[in-house]
Length: 605
Image (cartoon, rainbow, N blue to C red; front, side, top):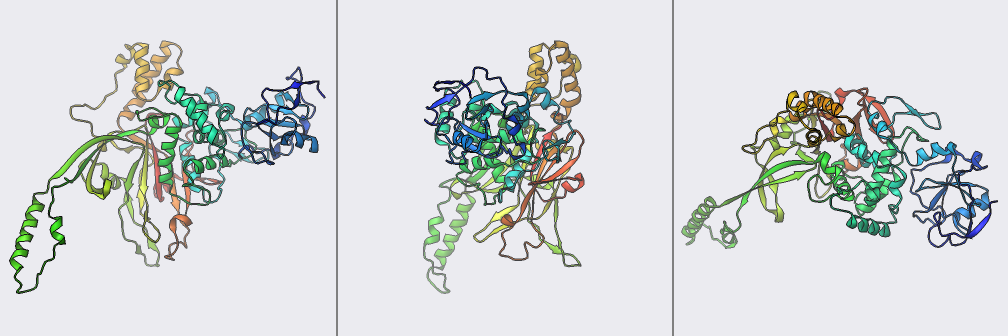
């Protein structure tokens, strides 16, 4: 038993006023603990929300018992953690937010190299070298139970109809700039100043106060304490998915799903199926706001990765140009032989004249987008000779006709006004998200369009759909001589302009920077300027074979979501559905019932 000191007002605190009692400490906090051999790693699970198993309270001072795996609040006298240590003899605890280890009831901090694996499992951290080697790493990791898994391609637990969340997270986890951004944020600091997903009021208020104090030049900042709880939980989930030091081969997204439920006010909730495309659009906006982004283009990593520019031309009938509507309400006697026949004929002629004089108002605006929504044409289903349904197919080129820059499509504006809209793509993002609308709601149920949209896995050429403003010439890459004549500032500006500032950061000498720029300009930049894309992730929706034969079944609720992602190092594609991860052939991806597609511009990797 260590020497007693006075009433403690420092850190370890037990949350609230429970740590005002007398605590214990030692002069040498670096000494090892004699109870380390009682730790049972097979019972440790850090995927759950850090809340006390006795009081159900959550907060910054919750500790995990390293012997039984349960969570308790505080460590001072009269706190649940202290009581648990006295009653059961469990001595070693970890602070679930800071990652520090403590011995109770003596209450001294433990620092021992043998605890490094627990720290890595609790809060995975990544160096710049680790992040750079992720895509090329094909080595399988092993969990405590001997099961092998490939980091980044791990299954996510389905918490009851949360497969749409799992599929979207799997897709976003393989968008390289977004993944690297959250991996660089580190581990233990990411949750240090936030409350839990359910605790929220004070934490949100604190986050808002900190965000209001930051300078306008810090685009979201790199300080995770300025981020919303949803963004912090998302980053924590991404870091766990790519960790090779986990105690189990799967991940439970409990904290992220709870944060989603709170942020969406239970629009996306456990036990309630939803559309993955709508959830992705909502999540990208929430992450943008949660990372400190604003209306300015490029104000967050979300905008830098996914934001493009489109010109929208809207045509609609000008208000007040058609005054014949009141005539439709007048009673007309069109019986044969009536005295009003001449009047009726005159009114019809007047109405036709006014319709011909209707003024069409045209307005052109330029706006930004994070994803493009594509309408799949309705096609009839036919039965083959054996009575089975023949699913129609449609090439992606036909679906993209909406953005050809010439055709107008029907739309409904504000106030229910009928409009005609034409879309012209001005600038495509580095990562393009395509949302294929398969579901339509009516008063009774949700209908699904099963048409298969076929698309190429590599070299999707979208240059015919990009229309530059008048007078602007298509960009051409600089020559090698022009690159070698640039200054260091100009070279860095060139790389940053095309989203490859990481190349400049990895170069120390000017000669290295020039060599890297020449390699980028000659090998990667021509593909980037050509607007060619390779598939990164494909989210699909499947329904059981028997569903659809009974008209009362809801196809959205009965179906399930899959996600196809590729390992960049080996080129192998994987089909991930919740906890199931299996290899698949790329030929099967292009003919699946795709719902959300994420493409990467060639030359970025």
